[in-house]
Length: 442
Image: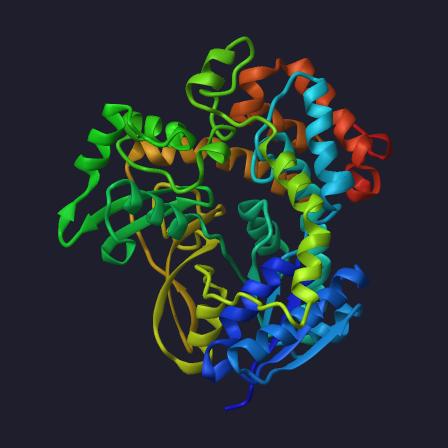
């Protein structure tokens, strides 16, 4: 068996890279893999290279590890490309996505998937992914691109419209939420049987069972009792209203809908424990602890903790290399109507069979109409943002923003237009030239 060539793009995300490498190299069939680490930050890349060797030693693997600042070298002949980049970084890009909207009266929690923050992240991310896909089309046209980068749906849609590279988007919200619900019910997640479908960060468990027992009555009773984890009040409230439980966390979901963050309604923030500005706080904490963490990871005398994560990336690679069939949840285009009552040109999150033939999405059919309708409010924003990126028509950025459920709950149309103008200016060269406010004609 020829060792697979696996490129990690954005490998300076050291902790995430460490987890993925531990997953990959712990499989005996992947223990001699050709690992290519690429990043634009030489210092962070050097740390990840050291960590990669330590992980390999810890699991008894013997991979070839190459660290490079040359993306072409990393991609050349790659069988798999794992993407974990963040265009613009926390500073200045993410800080801008929070600071500017706050000045305009728009409050956010995570701002990386939908809403004003998600739109701006897509505008600066999709062009970079497309540029990378052009390299892949030339250097490794048969590769499978495993995308971990947000905004997931808009990235998948933007690439599908403009690239021939096979791409599947990977997230951990499905498996994480299943574990949370099992914990809430006092059950082992390994004993839970579920079926989930929808769009990324807004997929719902259509079935959630334990040894043949439908667990929804127990979840509904828990929601009605009010004795739910404080950090999950938003999602349990939506269970009460919709009849199904959503995959993404409450701090994410609160800004995908117009019900929980509303101007003049701070009582809602308190009642549902909505963590405003959660993502900046999380990032600042990680930045503050990086030097200590780096020293630990680089210290050859300190033990390195390598445990299998819940990420699907290594499972997909292993199944495609060995032929062992598995089911994972992936984000793919809704080609052929995998979910019948969602648009065919949107990205959906569905169970996928993986074997030597690659990632094969499961056809779900129709989902409950109230779920499809709620998803459509998010798909509207995703579609219009993608249209702006593909056509270069700046007006669709404003259309996406005005149709965003959260922005519309807090701002009027003039405020939304003004906010988009300022954000496009503030992000400058991170935004494609044809979409920049001062360089595009109305």
